[in-house]
Length: 290
Image (cartoon, rainbow, N blue to C red; front, side, top):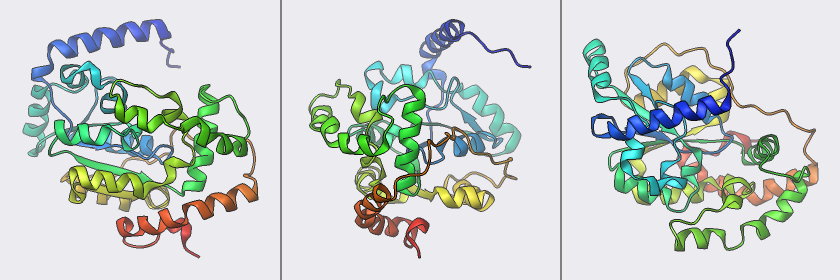
C-alpha cells in the first residue's frame, strides 16, 4: 500500500519545489491552454485524461495553480515556477515530432472578475477549455463539495440558496475595485451564480476571442468520453491518442434527493441562461431537451 505523506512534509516539499521553480523560471514553459471552469463540472477528470497524453506536460506540483485569481500578486516568476523545464519539452518534441504543451486547471478562473483579463494580457495565445454541466445538479454538487471540505457550515441546500444574495452582496464590486481583495464567499458560496455559464463565457469571448474557447458539455464527456476527448485534442492541436481509461474524480456523496420545489425554482432561474448557452454548444444543452 502506498504510504501517505504527512501534510507538514508535503508542505516543505512544495515550498522547496516552488522556490527552485522561481529561481529557474526563465527556463520553464508557460501553458498553451487552461481548463478554467466550471466548478464541479468534471474538470479533474478531463485534467487527468489530458495529462495522460504523451506530448502534454502537466503542472509540476498540482493541477490548480490559482495564479490568475487568488495568487496574482506573487508574480509571473512564481507562476512559471509551477511548470516543466523547456529542456523537458524539447526532449518530448524530439521523441514525438510535435511541440510539447503544458497546462493547468483552476476552475475559479472562469468566475473571478479579474482572471480572464489577466490571462488575456499574460498569455495572449492561450486556449481555454470550459466544461458546463446541468446547472441545477452542479449547484447541488457544489454545496456537497463545500460541506465536505469544511468551507460551508449550513447543511440545508435550500437555506444556502436563500443566504446566497446576502453573502455575495457587494463582493464582486469589491473584487473589481481592489485587485488585492479576497472574498471567501465569492469563491466558495456562489452556488446559484456559478451555473449562469453564458454570462462568464461572454466575458471570456470579449477578452480572448471566441475562437480560442472550447465549451464541452460535461454530460457528453461522461457518456461518450472518447469522442469528446478527440474533439478536445483537435481543438488544442494535439495529435490523436488512444484515450486513457476515463474515470470520474472528486465525486461527492449526496445527502439525499433534492427538494422538488427547489429544483423547479432553479430550473426556472437558469432557463434564459441555458438558452444563451445554446449558441456555444450548437444546440440547446442536453439537460434542457425534452
